[in-house]
Image (cartoon, rainbow, N blue to C red; front, side, top):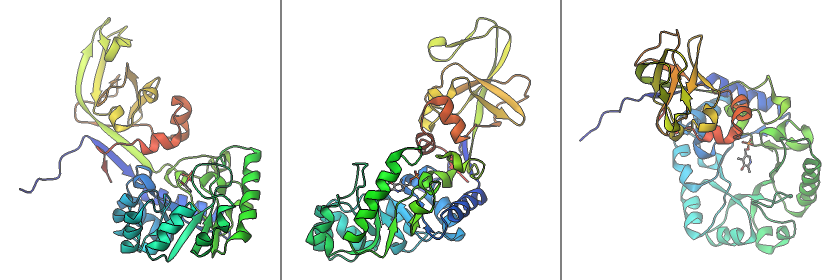
Length: 347
Ligand SMILES: *Cc1c(COP(=O)(O)O)cnc(C)c1O
């Protein structure tokens, strides 16, 4: 039986022009370096089927994923040699998948180098750890004969604190510079979004922005230059009139002091709208601000409809200014963005 496309009470409108413009802005800020795009985690929740063709059409030629499971969706839009897998090859099965698809692994250890060689080798990237101690090989590992035998496109490293003004950035750059003469590579890549704001020394040949493409502002130098990309909306599913003393939601965290017209909205923490984001926040109906009443539930939130005239079936705008939401909730912009749930219809 063929099932029709289900109706949805959550919408996520993606401003493709803003996404393309953010890429062009980051490309300009990257100077002479080529500008890639991190599209892991379904393009940070934006959706690869929208993000990857938009970035490709803007001129992006290098796409970074974390998992092999993310490869097929991206290969619907770009050639395999433009796709790099940051987690590398964990075992022969992943290496065979890489060979089968043509997507390029980022080799993170001598062990991964041997797995890649045993699978037949070919072009790969190499990640060197310059002081984050997360993923990538040490400078000493670069001397390993198996690593030396790799066919390396980009030699890469990753910055731990590019969003801060800290000596760690210069320290990591110095370690990366020491790594460069130790392994033959076609090009060098260090900066993520925040790294791009640190200037030409950090951008070198290829930059790898993620967050800022999608409207995040990880560094003050990007303020005013990056546009909001994702615009969530949620439908009102029920309205009711509250009398003074009526309690709303789990644990009765809000109690009416005056007659209040309330709307229950199809949006909850299962959709990425966390309880911390609801506190002191509001949804919008046109120009009207509708304060959130009480706790955010898993699938619902209650708002004060006031004099807005919004009723059952109307869609409300969910605030999604990432720096502002992060500052108010204590969550990171990354968590808020990637938390956007699967129940949104993405436009
Ligand atoms: C995720 C990731 C990026 C993108 O980082 P943003 O901070 O989102 O710009 C770049 N490089 C690597 C290795 C990453 O894991």
